[in-house]
Image (tube, rainbow, N blue to C red; front, side):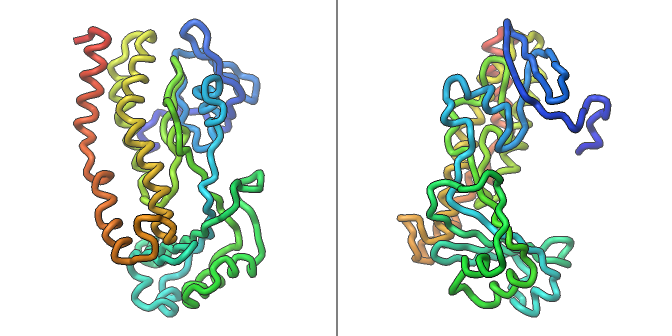
Length: 300
């Protein structure tokens, strides 16, 4: 996809330190001292992105920073042949292993030559206690996080995982995705947990709707209208993804009240919970967005 972007329109190694709005103009200050004046700024700068503060800071300061979802994970990549020796044929297909307070996801990668393993651990602490979102521990601490689990899974973790805890943060609540001429897109708006594998898809859905709206904007004064329609269409769906992803993590660790450790209920829930994500009509969203913009701006 990057091949489609003219290289002279992209600048790397830039860090934003301030975003201000004045009389319909946006002023972006970078760490190297450069100040850019523009019609708009759209922040696609991730879960800890600076733009979120520019949109929410004055009205919802308590919701600017991502919230700890009370889970962290360990990662490992194992050669397929080694994984098959340990797990048998289970290593060749995607699988989820569930248990109280923990769950494991495994699936083939690299054209079937390797297995990706992600081991999730529920964390009773109220907040992530470290400044960085990753934290190095020793091997024994990592293994003790999964005491009682199938020894074959533990063996994979012991052999191939680095004992680094990756904390999972999300934006469970975002009251708006824009403030006048500044907007949020992707994880800066709705960072989510990985439990429904839907976060990247939501970023692409954002980009589709936003790009179609911006394609209709002829005057800078109409940018807030485009952003309001984007917010109207995208925010309910994207925030539902964040909430239901958190719920899915609870289900996989037997912490969800409606399913508990009853595997029949867990299976029934998993069999039906993804359809609304996969089968959504994005073309209809685009048609509604364009129609609303034309009606509200009189550009019909």
